[in-house]
Length: 305
Image (tube, rainbow, N blue to C red; front, side, top):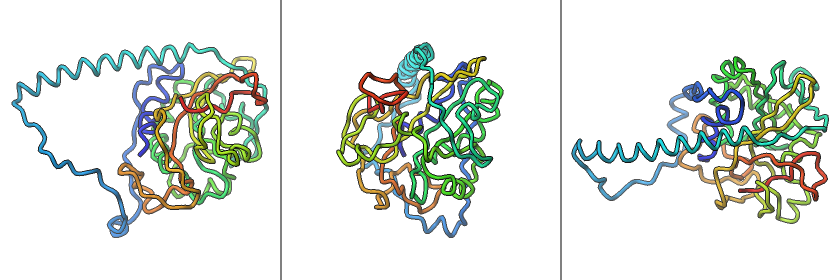
């Protein structure tokens, strides 16, 4: 399981919106929907077995070691709070492009997705045209969204997942997974390309792409991230921040779409025996202002940090 997705599941809301007081999400217990017999047939990887005996200490020694570690944890918390505060103070970028999405209720603009609220969280869900299923790591995160929606709404925040797959692909998969959050398709628009979560044909052909602010080796047809937007009283929409990458420079499995790969020990078991059809890993990445060399209205097809 992608550690960035696990981290994003708990930090994506509290650190990037004015609802900064939302320090914890309401996390729903994963409910497998397959039969027990089917579950027993599933092939799953297990964590490596530790062969060396773990150190055993007295209660007093454990307390001393735990208190020492607690100080480091507290410092990490303070650093994270400080970074979150800096992130919220980043300058905003006004969006000029009139993006339009396919929804279950028909066409909708980005402004419509705010659903009457001033803030919007967009999760870029890795699900490309022609894929049979969505990314397992994105799916793990998605399993924890529905329970948080009421708390986000109470803090003037809407949530929507966006994928480049057509709505006809998204809806059956969403029903299968039992998710209720809004999920729309950006198929036919430049939204995914402008926010650098889908590679262009030229990037795929050249084997190089932009991700997290720099050009890197080709990562995959689809990548993921979390964009946050604010709509002012006049209706202008501003891009604020995105969660930064949690996988800095890690090598990825670059198998082609449809080619199976072994599940990571933390894979999303709820989905049973399906494989990541993209054959790609997941990373979060921030938004950036348009660079002079970019012809896009927003961002620079961000590369990895």
